[in-house]
Image (cartoon, rainbow over all chains, first blue to last red; front, side, top):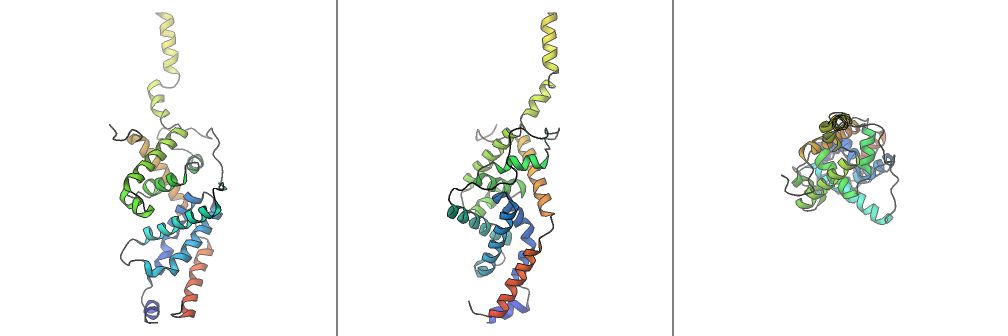
Length: 192
Length: 54
C-alpha cells in the first residue's frame, strides 16, 4: 500500500516507459520484420515490464532493461511457434531497385529488405550496435551473451549485408571507372 | 589489418551503420499509435483500482 501510494504521488518511474516506446517499436520491427507483429511484441513487452517493474533497478538504464524484456519476449514466442517462417514485410528479392550512390546510400527499402534476410541474432546485434550505436559491451548485456559473440555476429551481419548490397563493388568501380578501363585496355592491346 | 578475417573494412562498416541509422530515424519519427498510450493508461488505472493486491 505504502509503495503504491508513494508511487502515485511522486513521479512514477514507469511513466518513463512511454519515452522509450519509439525505440522499442523500432527494435521490435528489426526483430519481427512485420509492423503488426512488431507492435504486438511491444505491447506484450510493455505489459511484462509494467508488472515486473519491481525487478528494475532504479538508476540503471531503463531502455536497456526494456530491450532485454522485448527480445526475451520475441525469442520465447518464436520458440513456442517453432521454426515457423516469419511473415516478413517485403521479402528481399535478388536485384536491387536502385544502385548505391557514391556514399553507399541506398534506397531505404532495399536496405531494409536485405537486413530482414539476416538471421535473428545477427539482426538484433547489428541493430543495437549499428543503428543505436551501442558499445559491444552494452549490446552483450542487453542480449545476455558474451562480448565476443556480439562482435562476431555484428561482423558477420555487416559482411553479409555488404555482399547482398554490392557495397564492396564501389571500390572496384572507382578503380576501373566502370567499363572505361576495360575499353581503354582493349584499345591499348589493339594499338600495341 | 583486421584482427578477425570476417571483419568488414571501416568504410563498409560506416556505410552500413549509416543506413541503419537512417532506418532507425525514419522509424522513431513515426507517430506513436494510440494503442500504446491507451495501454499505459489502462495499466495505470488497473494499478490504482487493485491497490496493493497482486
